[in-house]
Image (cartoon, rainbow over the protein chains, first blue to last red):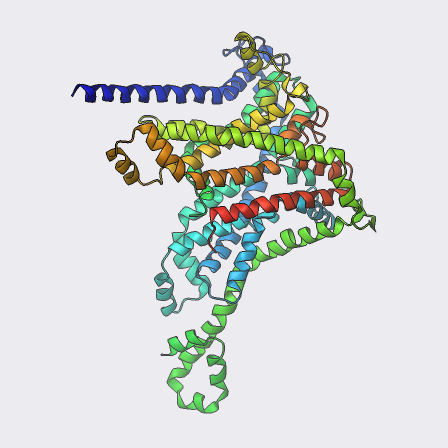
Length: 284
Length: 326
């Protein structure tokens, strides 16, 4: 009885200890964000950084944020990123749903070989394709437009793979019933299977969105026009131009650029975390 | 009956039938069914390829063509307009070039330490989160947050966080009496600035993957161990860790592939040449510098192929280990 009691106590103590370790490390992990927001709100940090660092701004003001928003380039880059991301997600998810469904339920010659080809695309990184894709889009005069960012995501091996696995879990009897009713393959896909594909479609949209929104190297290569910059491109060009000379402004800019994604993440965190975990445990 | 036949021999059966006029006249009734069957048998083969058209158009244009084109380019001296065949010279130049091997060294150095630090640390955090009775979801959200923010914005913030004079890291180091490194202002410590940033950014991903797999370990195993008298630490050492080896392998290899392709954060922190003194120029940055600031397309293509082969080896391992089913 006595030993049982103390064991319980130890258990409770370790739980409290664990909680505190996690809390402290969480705060350390969040520290750059906290500092970023605080410096952004500091009027005196507009040009020279406050030293020693402080948590509460000396002169609280939205001055830096005002400049960032008034400048307009961030908003422009948001619009650009929005156009690019929405279009490329639509194209990529649609083509992957079609292909994933065909690889799961279809019966046709060369299915296995074609699927292996799709899996092989997972092994091809962006770097060796960079220069040929650049010259390809250059030859059709599409550099400095959004097309080079929207079109290539039409092929995404990971999305096709995830989608095929999802459709594999749906029973074939659904198809057979629809077939007896005389429905064609496209009808069966759109009327029977697509309405059931909500969960995987949501996962695919989330993953494609994250990939497209954060894409950097390829947009850097094809977009030289300042008016077409996506959010990461604008941030990078601002950072390379100014280095660490404009503390308050840079931090305000970083905050405004991160904020919408963070809000979106806080609302959708369960689905986003699930999607990431799903793409990570893809072997099972 | 007809249904079955059409399925067994989709190509031959329906084609043969209508040829005989007898068939048509005699079986007025089954004619309609046969016609429908023919359409279905014909369609069921071809129509699936229509489903695949968008994806395979993409594969041809954006995967197959560029991969072979860049292989071809690697044997040419090219600036995008003028091309001359020079055989293996590009590869010779690359493989004997100091800056290229320097970029390989930087990439490997940053990648190895990032992985060696992040996977064990992330696993420990995941175990803690998994076993804490309160606030699991809260911690998950907090720890994953850095991974959601774009690495470009993160690099921008870290330039300040690690600033030698006004950054918070050096301020804290100074107040507790530790030496304050120059971080990004000094070639001998700049790689560690990138490592810190990449650990901070990647750890959320490692934690999420570890948590998903920790929760997949069957509780009966722990139950059995508890009956045998194993303590918490013993359970962790002898049940949890052995069950996580596949996860560690997966993280090791995806992390390594990502590390080999590192570009975004070093570009923001050090520009295409990876300053200071090329100390953080990765392979990706080397290729970008050669290809798009120097427009040496042939040379850059050769470098991408060397990099591609290195990545290919590790991706192949990834597929082997994560046991993807065809």
